[in-house]
Structure formats: C-alpha cells, structure tokens
Length: 242
Image (cartoon, rainbow, N blue to C red; front, side, top):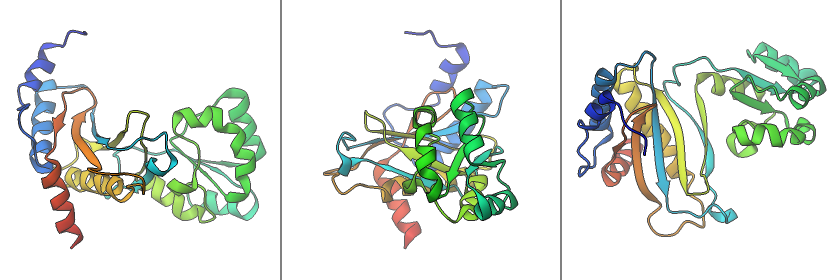
C-alpha cells in the first residue's frame, strides 16, 4: 500500500468515517481539506456513485450527459465532424476544430486527441465510426445517447462549452465525473453536484432492480473521499423538483 503524506493524513482526520454527510456538509469538508492540503493547483471536485446495475446487460447500462449549471471551470476544446452547411454552422457557433475526411484522417494517422468533446452530424457517423478504437477508450466517441450525434450542432457546441459532462457506468457499476473546481463558491458547487446526481438518477435503466444507488461520495483530485447520505440527498432532489 502506498504511504500517504502528512497533509493527506491530516485531511483524512476531517472526515468521520461513521457518518454520512449531506451535500452541503460534504462541500464544507472539502473546502477545509483544500486549506490543509495546500495544492499548487485548483483541484477538481469529483463525484463517484456506486450503482446496483450489471452493465454486461443492455437493459442495465447507464449512460448520459448533464450540462452543469456553473460549468467545470476550465476552457473546453470542441471538435465537430461535419461538412457543408453544418460545418459552417459549427464554425460560427465557436467549435475549435471542424472538418470531415481530413480531420478523421488526422486522428487516424496521428492518434490526435487534443480536445475535450467530439460532436458529429448523423451523416458523418459512418465515417467517424472508424475512430472508435482511438476515441472510445478516451470517452470521446460521439453518441446519440449523450447528445453528441446531432443535426443541431450549434446547441451541442453551446452545451459543451458551458460544461456538459458525459458519464457512463464502468464494469464494476461505478459512475465517476467531475463537478467543478474547489475554488468555486460553495453554492455553485452544490448546484453542480445536485445536477450531476439528478442526471444519473434520471438515467436509471429499465433493468435495474432493488436499490439503484448504493453509494455516493465526493472528493478532490487528490484527497480522501466524503460519503453522502443517500436518503437525504435524494430527498433534497425531490424537494427541488417539486
């Protein structure tokens, strides 16, 4: 087991392992951790959820996206695979890279992936499909389920630039995604966290049985995790939706 540094150990003391925190309490703890850890960079706040699903079955796959109310706190590079009028619309909407065959060949030959989000029009997908081995493992492959295969490229680019986050359950039944920076104001972080959790709740597949969410935790890029009270968190989501 890797040895933990003194600051990490001090940060861990801020967490009561026998307690399950509200989102608001957890953010307070993370803010205190950040003061103790004193990193030289603005750490990302990470959300992790353990789900009661088996992604080996199609009716238990969890996948989707969410536009965080206050973004991710970083610039987002967007690639759009489009031609003709759609390409012009993408350029006008602020895409960082737009193209068809030339862009696809660049990625194939150079395995170039210096971007955060890839969007494609439906007509381009037969050609983009050949990029699966490169973009797939990196979570960059356009998909209708996440809104990145669309004719409305302007809206897709807008959402991506605002802070749209894609999520997909892994083989162990976990969903993991960034929800902002620790430098964000407390209320903005809370808004982002609830929005992300709500998106996963809404993505509950038809084949999921029993208790859908088994665990929820928040952490910084390099910090101990803070476990949330599932019942209180879901209750708050219901109150917000009412």
